[in-house]
Each structure stands twice: as structure tokens, then as C-alpha cells.
Image 1 (cartoon, each protein chain N blue to C red):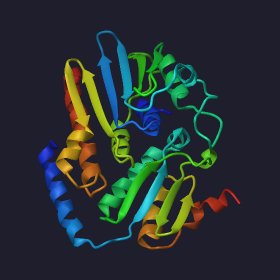
Image 2 (cartoon, rainbow over the protein chains, first blue to last red):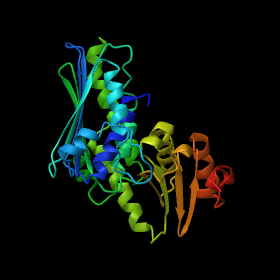
Image 3 (cartoon, rainbow over the protein chains, first blue to last red):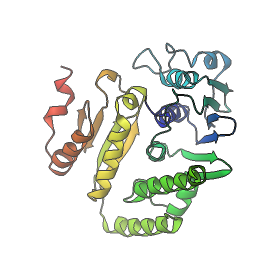
Length: 184
Length: 121
């Protein structure tokens, strides 16, 4: 996977399978400390200690269609390639938190990529899981929360004409705005 | 700048249309979005479906991400459900999406070039 936003999409599928109702994706571009952190926090089923220890093992998976599970392992590799790391905290019944850290100016740091595409696909998931995305850079921050959008939409589904397009443009503009300062 | 007010307009338009539309059976498009699918390019594929369905006003079509069905080597996999008829497409790319929309979803004819039978007997 060439973009961090693809890893995020992938790892969030685990939260969906774990019956989460809210997935929070927190991104912090900490330019002063040369660090990028990506946290994915869900309120799903969580894992016991035994399982938690094995999720970054490529030969561990809960799926029954095949015997390997690469989602978390690949995300971990992407972090470690930049001298970063990936940590998982989880407890049964209380959700899971994955925190990946990256070195911002590392040559092997993959770009974040089209995060708006990732978020729109997550918003269109069948289980109606909510997604909160917070992106912080140099004291600026952008937040996108499907709960807020759900409130505006009332009975209208996310699949209604024009909604996906609006979300995409809203996210793109929001991210562009918080990065304006940095470009100066 | 996109605002929540724009979203309200979109909602109001959608609500008007819903009351006009009778019980339409609808077509469902399922895009495999597990690790294998994503690595093979499922995100731009799903994205293209969403864009084109919107652009062409195909209001009875819903596009949904789903898990893996175990055929990881021939991802991206897309299933099109029209009533009881299920068609499984493999190795779908953006060009294939345009053909599936034009020929299958609008035209009603399965796009043979991408059906799973070509890859698995």
C-alpha cells in the first residue's frame, strides 16, 4: 500500500468487524518534533491480551477465508520503515487503540494520500458506524464527524445523491485550509 | 467553501426525490474492501462507482464496501446485485467500472470480460 490513508482504511475494517459504533482517527503532524502520529481508536469488542500480542503477526487472522492477516502487520511495517513504531492497546469489551508513529522527514515515509476517499468509504459502511477524524498541524486543526453530518441529514442516507461528493470536497477544503500556514 | 448549509440543500433535494420515487427494487454494488482488495486498488474503484452513480443520477443504485470473499488473488472484486441476480466481477479497474455502469447497470447486459468465470472455473 502506497498511502497511509489506505492503511487507515484497512485497519478501520477491523474496527467495523469488531462491532464498533464509533471510530476515531486522530492525525497529528508534529513538525517541531519531526513526528507524525496516527491514532485509530474504536469502541468495539476489544481483544484479550493473548490476541493483542498476535495481531501484528502476519500469520494471525480472525478471518475464515484464508490463513493470513496482513492489515496491522503492513501498517506496522510502514511505521517501522521510518524509524517509527506501532503500539496496540486493547481490552475486552472496551475497544482498541492503535497508535502509529512516523518520522516526518524520513525518505521512506509514505504520503497520507487521499484521506477523503478513505473517510467517504468508511462513512458509506453498512453498519452505520460513525467516524470522527481530527487532523492537527501547527496549532491548526480540522475535524470531520459523521455524527454531525448524520444530524444534518436526518432521515436522508449517506448514499443519497450529492452527499458523498459534498463530504469529499468538505474534507479536501478543510485539510487544504489547515495546511496553508505551513506553506507560507 | 463547502458548508453544512450546502449539505442541508442536498438533503432537502434528496427528500423531495424520495417521496416521488415509488418502491424501486434497486441495484446494489458491493466492493471488496479488505486488505487484499485495498492493496489491489479497491478504493479508487469504489470511488469511481460513487462518483459515476452520482454524476449519472442513478438513484436506485447503492455502493457499499464489504469484506473479503476469499479470492484475494483476483481482487478488486465487485458484486452487482440486481434483484436475485448476482454477478461477480474480478480484477476491476476504473475503466471496468465505467463499462459495468454503462453496459450492466444502465444497459442490463453483464460485462463478460470481467466475470469471475474467466478466472475461476
